[in-house]
Amino acid sequence: MRDGYDKEYEEELYREFDRHREIYEQNTPASVRRRRKRRRRRRKRSGCLGCGTCIIPFLLCFTLLFVFRDKYPVSLITDFLHDPILSTADDPLLGITESLDDAKANPENDASSVSEQTETGVPVEVVQDASDASSVVIPDAAEEKYTGLCYQTMSLEQRLIYEQLYEGIAAREKEFYIDAKEAEVVGTVLNGLLADNPEFFWMDGAASIYGLEGRTRKKITLEFNCEPEEIDHLADLIEWEADKYLQELAPDASDYDKVKAAYEFVISNVSYDIDAPQGQNLQSSMINHLSVCAGYSKELQYLLQKAGVKCAYITGTVTRDDVVESHAWNLVEIDGTNTYVDPTWGDPSYVMSSEAARELPDISYNYLCLTSEEMDRTGHVANENYVLPECTSYEYDYYIRSGRYYEYCDTEAIRMQLRNAVDNNVPDVHMKFATPEDYYAAQIEIFDEGMLSDELQNRMKWDGLTTITYFPLTNDDLYTIEILW
View 1 (cartoon, rainbow, N blue to C red):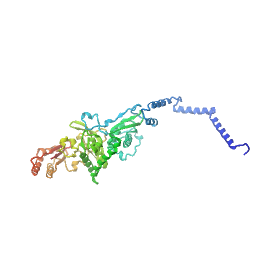
View 2: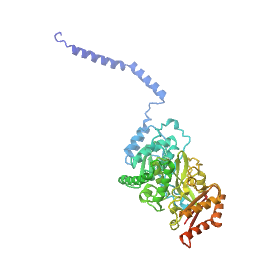
View 3: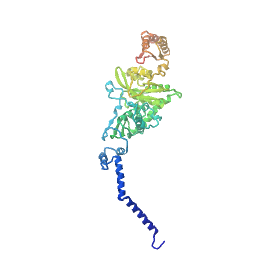
View 4: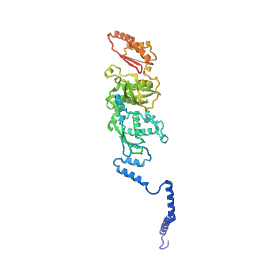
């Protein structure tokens, strides 16, 4: 090192010189002109004039968001800024509430009110050809929680909404956000979800949907029919009731055995009461033991799902004495065969007046495992949005399986059935006929020609009685004859 010479200082001077030279070269008139030309070419390709007017809409948007910052939560504003997907929505920045309260209905009203009310769990609208189906990815639907009838018949878009709603309700959230294009679709899917999942007893279908125009983000506000802190206790009571049914099943019980046992369990433990509180969910039937058709059918669905049998909750209308009423029943799959069950109509306390029901058996098997054609004859009409299979098999018909079904009016076989019942002191006789002609012919033989009277005379002689009171029940729709004494 020479005296007065600092090598590091000299290197620093060279570096500083190089920086200044780079800055100079970048800002020479020629360099500036080249950069300006490149910018102009880019603007020309993009259509931008470079005037700055494109900033005005963004300024207006932020101004509106600032003005309405108290009306809309911060999460909605951030979702609006970050969600890149646009769609048609419910209302122009005013958060119009769309109420789904029409899903809460008392299904046993008179005809004048049917048009204004619907059962809980109205089925989803099935979209056969979803335009955006190719762009939607569906999670694995094999999960047990996504196997309901309504879910299986939904479009891909509806399934995504279903899964988001399911997670929010299962978490017992009263407010949460989902991605959905149209509020109307959300309402339809929500009703379908509740039809598939009776275990969500704290929901009867009432909800509100809020959204910003052009945005897919929707705020869901649910109405619970009980306090959130009560749900666990109520769930324990329902589970305890279900366990009683499961304990009655034999270890080797077939699917038919499980369905028949569930049918008997529901009818034996629930009484029909049109004014039953919580009548649209399991609380009425499994805790209070007073319900309407929704409670009967949802309990049957819940019990069979617990037993591993596929069962769907169906809503629609029935016609009784020329009066149309809202109603609910079930579609059941037994060993791959679909059949219908109506536990409400299987309860004599519903079919007959309470006074007459005292003289009737606890259970009528007329509505256990029916075909589609029989459901049509009894006036059951499902809501049009359901996609239902045609049930044609009589394999699980109660009367056939119990040996009480007649292909024709076999007079001697009918007489023998009556005689066996009288001789063995059996208090009731049940029979079903294949055709209306044989059904009416059997009535003539039994009641008009004295077949029943002859057998009852023998019973009176044995018991030392002078009279016997019997109750004949005939069903002109299902061609059944029941006699009780």
